Length: 162
Image (cartoon, rainbow, N blue to C red; front, side):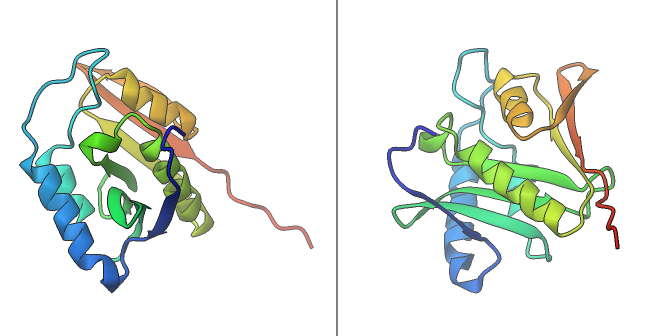
């Protein structure tokens, strides 16, 4: 990871983080929209994903904090029909520095520990950044054509022996 500062991962659903999560999501919504090109910085999250990230429903959700600032948010959206789906967003100045991978890895591990056997991550872009995060998290990449990817990770059930 290329942070240079300690990254702290915490449960995002804690009431003490409500204002920070709201501010983080407001900042994401305020970003100018653009289409990402190969070699360009990671694209900003679309508004629908930001809404789902800040949803108050019970979910597995983690926040990444550096020096008291919330810089990333991830959650498993178990309400998604094709899901459960992993959603990740990182503030612009921290993108491309390993935050999404760290945050996604911890969120996926927590979901699997809670008994979620299959997680999907979707992208409307074929960007190498999405594929790199998916590969780092152990997802298989499926190209759906027209620039869309599905990334799927399945964990086999644990069999207990007596």
